[in-house]
Length: 316
Image (cartoon, rainbow, N blue to C red):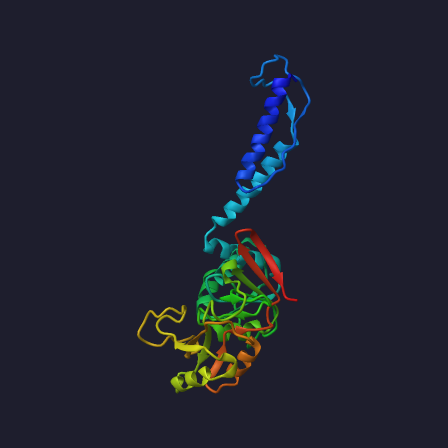
């Protein structure tokens, strides 16, 4: 290759390296290896010149990786939830098993996937235990065979979402108002698979999402005062849920009622709960409390969908 042509190839290679670096993807500059000289001797572009440049391959590989990350970042929260829900069913549900189906916006995608795979024939002989009337209705619409714990209390796997997940895979659940049915079903499963988008990950339970507690309507104000005084829940503010039981936003003038005919109290915290296990034990021992949304020591694995893809965190 003529010196001028070789110099231009070097400049182009270094320029490409600088351009990739400017998009926050660093590639160390490398000189091109020329395999064929120019036949024309011109310093302009000659299609007959074949330049073998390791940098070129590296550039396209790095750019492709960046585009993939950008694509993941562009996904909506619902799309991330769908990825987690579908992966849970694909990885953990097998034909001939009994499964627990959770409640909520993320769990609905897992239910959808079970219905799809039953319809296509990929799954057969599945029996599902729903954790709410909403999940029951969705499952029936998709043709998923259903049962209850009364006839099938030994589950192979349960799949459900969560409102918060701490580093130890302890959970806050019950934002959708189905915490009692979720807990009784999921405690019967050999494996409990949690599905979330990465916005649900936290350093400590409490401040990021109020802890729901299901209580009986009788003397509910008294029960709320007792809860506020529990030592492990120091600093919490109990708030009775009003309106639609499926969310913790006040959107009505009457107390929200669960599928079991009870009320929901949302416990608001400004600092993380120091001991979620003790908090759960004290709540469970309180007369008037049916159950609570602290799910501790139950998770087998947590499937997380985020901007960098879908990954699995397993319990230690």
